[in-house]
Image (cartoon, rainbow, N blue to C red; front, side, top):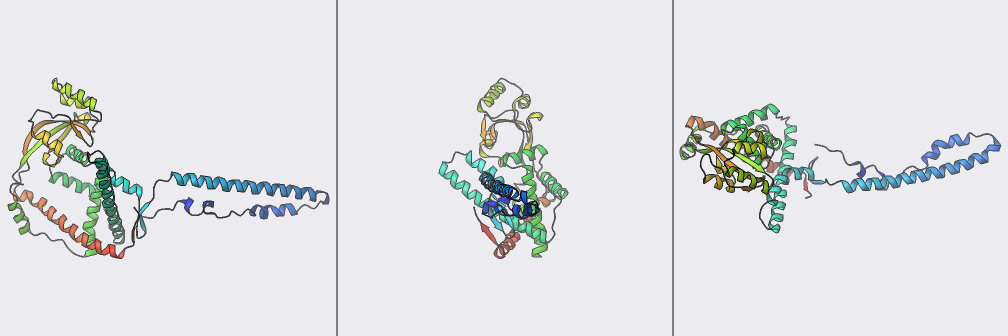
Length: 363
């Protein structure tokens, strides 16, 4: 991915390059020397000196203005290069975009300021390493002409939702809980698919998962496939504690949870009465998990402070879900083994690629 260099840093008077002040003289001089009337020569020369003096002043003024303009523009530029990867670069804006959700969670936590600072530095380093890996992967994918279509990504996401029994509402909420967006998730899926194809093209090594491995795993994890309770949930989200307290008071007075969600919630599912879908709450943050675990169907939680804001959850129903026979679990187990082995082979290949690449970090 090539980027144009900021013009202020290349061909610009800011670098001290002299403008051809005498150029105006060269262009206009023939006109001055075509004066043939003796009586007008002195007058014409006087005009010429005055004109060139004014011209030089104007050009000098333009240089000063140009210099000032460049200084102003440069002062406003907040982006910079944080890594060079062969012919590609990683910018601070790209890094901030990827690390932003994680940093937001850290800043909203109760850790001491020094701990937060250290955690933010660590997460920036980790994200930068990931962006460097992605850059190398993209470069190699171009080399092998590997492309991933939007349709391929859509099918993969649908398969993921199906294998995990996720409704669209549950999927959307999972993204919110992770502090990510559908765009970022799609990009992550795309990178995973590229990695899988690169293994076949670059490493020339097929990933093999045997049926005996899958059966052995299923037998060793019968509890996992025997099913578990899942919660059909609604929620109300507010960014103001006073507002959520008023909502809680209305709930205590037997007001409809769905109606209050429509009226007060700022979540994307507000118009649907706060409907979220069916979830395995063991994957939820501890504060939400603990609050839901102590209430029953038809009850709601106390106010919970989360990274997204203040929330109240309502249990619409509790269902036994996830019970799978060996045949039903086969694809899920295969996918798990396959991705694990692709990732392992990919990391080995990537490390060898890094040794040959020109990588410079400037964070």
